Length: 141
Ligand SMILES: [Zn+2]
Image (cartoon, rainbow, N blue to C red; front, top):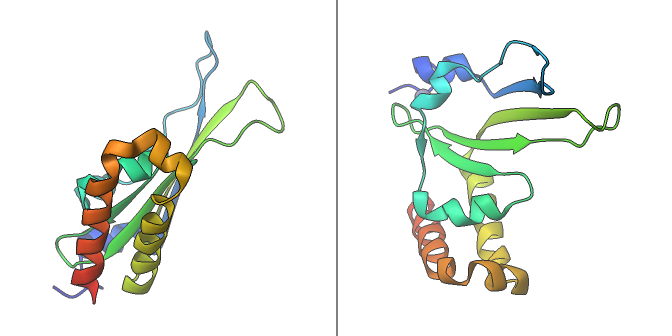
């Protein structure tokens, strides 16, 4: 399918971001803002990479649109309140990436899992993450 005419990707665009303020207890808060429903039609590139994504300071994910093979980089940020420390914002960003960027992210995953702190905390996940990242890199060649 043509990448430009894919209904899912058309709606998501190059980048899509939503921010949401978590209400304080007893507060009504604002209406919850979610990413477009098309976002939920994207699929995980490889769930074996999950331990690596979860270990990141900002949780992330790598997704694919199976209709047209576009790749996406999803990130979640909860910046600490500089204006009001009690407040927590959650930002969700989904960005379309090309093969080159995807390779870069997979390579940095392979690098990071070799680090000592990763080995300490996620020892059992290393073979799984390594195999998944290597397999994807091979497929992307
Ligand atoms: Zn698509």
